[in-house]
Image (tube, rainbow over all chains, first blue to last red; front, top):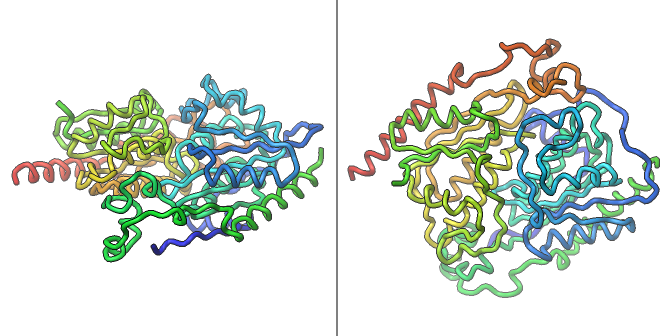
Length: 258
Length: 216
């Protein structure tokens, strides 16, 4: 297999430059003061976009949040019913969405949190639909005097071999459109496709192994063994990247004015 | 009878530019068609359960299994989305994810003809081309042959929210410069754009290809 697990932390400043090259880039047109109200207890809101229980993503998110030492709450998007944005712009006036689904209680939590960590899994080179739906529904917080202005955020993605594109996209979304201060990000290319557990990974001509391998290698690919399943904990560079991000968040939260 | 050509729109706006451009391809093909607006049905994201691995049928009980039958039997698919925040919208994305169920072992959508439609506020704002490439990539992963990639300029929501002229977050200065007054001529119609002609061509090409397949 020619896909090896890799990871890195992308410095926050890189997002804008990279995205400018790709899509023209967006910078906030005006600078506004933050609309945050001071809170006694510092708190992190963690968004888990993976539908798999105890996934690499979930464990990475828990580690990053836990290591900051601050309280945190994890939201598992796949357990909730959150619909995509309807584009009705009725949120422009009251900064809340009219759709009565499980996103409703999250707006207060997002505004109250000292930092937001958004984690997604990468399908087709982009964050998955659970994650993207959540990001779309942030729209109510974007109008007039955005309550997210300058707030702290981080992005985490797990993917087969395209996780880096995922964290770039989430970071760009949060920083450019929602004026978050993205402290950093971590990605983990797990090289562990669903084809390893479906039961047909060694024979299916349309799965990941068939695409990744040369025809000769695939012809000789007869067995899926436990060591092919990658856990982020077994990759010191991924663990270290999580710890760096955690420390970055911890310091940034500590230096925020109350 | 299943439609020969199936049009899918992820735009939640009523009779939107995206909808009309997808419908233009369907009409130009002259084939038996059906248009599905994802915001009017319930298609949730893939939950990665792999319940589809044996029979290529998604086990999530929402409106996808019924739609999947139409996809499976259609000769061609026209998928339209828009690009909030520089990437394809969540309605379209969820639909594309669920096509995964038809891939295992048999690659049921291999060789299916497809066209991609995306709209966005354009005029320097990123997203239309990116979202277009994103949909095309997902369809190609399912083995489809993408015959046309149509990109249209649509309208910023800030034109209709009521605060577009004064809101500091407004997209209007970005698109229209200093003139942010909301006036009728600022609204784009896909029928006035070059892509409208391309839609007719793509529709006719799909029809010709499908007829040639039937004749073989």
